[in-house]
Image (tube, rainbow, N blue to C red; front, side):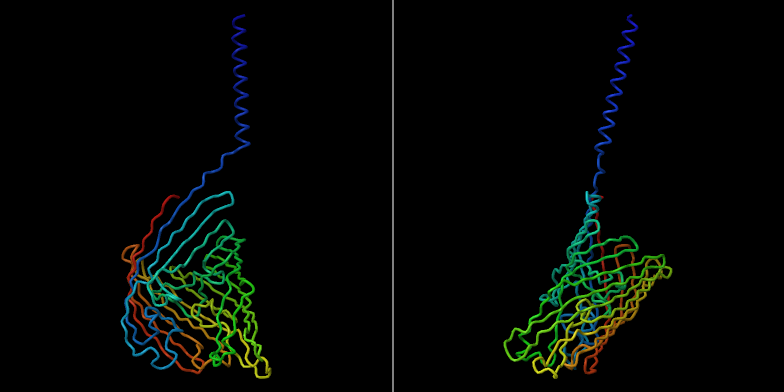
Length: 409
């Protein structure tokens, strides 16, 4: 009898354990624990010295660049030749964060500044925002490279401004990235903008009362095909530019234009080298170009007394070819040529920018992974609407110290 009671007690205890275990497993299946998210922060940048000699002359606010549109537009515009320059305006600081994953996907942000002043800070060494941008899975928002821009096309050069014939623009935007990876697709809506040139009528009161307006965002898109040999990228842009005549007189100089562009770029791997090619064509897209003055030019229209002057979206063509060559683990060279041609309107001034050429060759040395020293010869040419030409010729020596630190991850 005693043995039977022991058997029943033991059997009941075993059954109870089975129920507890089953209940525990059921709870685990119903409420699985999510994988913990991992966050990281990268602090990065570099300190950079540019020291060199300008054998010709350029707008003093652009002393440490070879910006072709800032070369003289007439003889002796910026004084005599031969100027030595030095600066640290390329110095950069940035912070990147990453949280992987969140409930909606990966979250990334970037905040980046440099010391190169433009606009109201033209010519100054001052903080300038480059990127303020975030991505959550397939959506991005903020200031970042325009979807129309290929950031991988910039060659490995010391000169800050870069080839005259490439699309190179950071813009405020919202983007959708439905396909990601080596082959990817991006669609964006971006902050509109643009500039006009009143040309020979710029000082007329009738022209001075014109106000630009941008009723729609710029729409951009790109598709990139990634291959073992490199990549090919095709990007497009369409935009609407409007201008209103606010002066109540006998003329109506209001108007509008549709801007559009196609930008084809490629990076071709040749052993350890990369051949970078770019071709862009469009109308009224100059503010997306690396170095174009205006999007809309004045055009005579004398057949209409009420509208004797109209605006024309200026066609532009840009071509670029550079080779980034690796000699060995410490020595590299980049050399190439770029140009752009603007089809001027007939009422633009004689000294309006017409086309530009840009060529560079360098030799760079990396003694340790975070330091770079190099020298570079730079040549450029500006040509005006009336055929006037001016050349730029510089030698630049640069030293760059790079830093980076990662937290978390």
